[in-house]
Amino acid sequence: MARGPKFFNCSNCPAYCCTYDHITTTPADIERLASHFGIGVRLATTKYTKLVSQEDGTKIRVLRHQKDEIFGTACQFLDLETRRCTVYEGRPKICREYPGTVRCGFYDFLMAERSSQDDPEYVPSFTRG
Image (cartoon, rainbow, N blue to C red; front, side, top):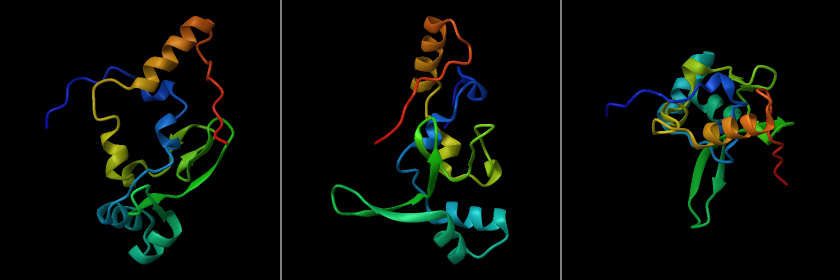
């Protein structure tokens, strides 16, 4: 699928997409992570992912999280200082395809907030309880 030009700059964002509760992984994603770290798939599965139950009772495999001062939790591969992915070349497909459109809703919101606050570094406080 051909995608149009990207109308946002991820380097201006505090990595909101990395804080989604369920960053799903596929077997191919886990193989990519295992290869990235030079470890076996079984170890990568245990170390970097976990199973979570969905409302319909099915289970999905997602990336593990770490504590994050801005959003409450974030992907374990997010560098909390630079707000950049530490496994960029090995990241899951869902991360590679995000946001799936030429616009990012959070980026638009963030830029509007920074403009209204007259602060180019402003980040709204988000913590999940």
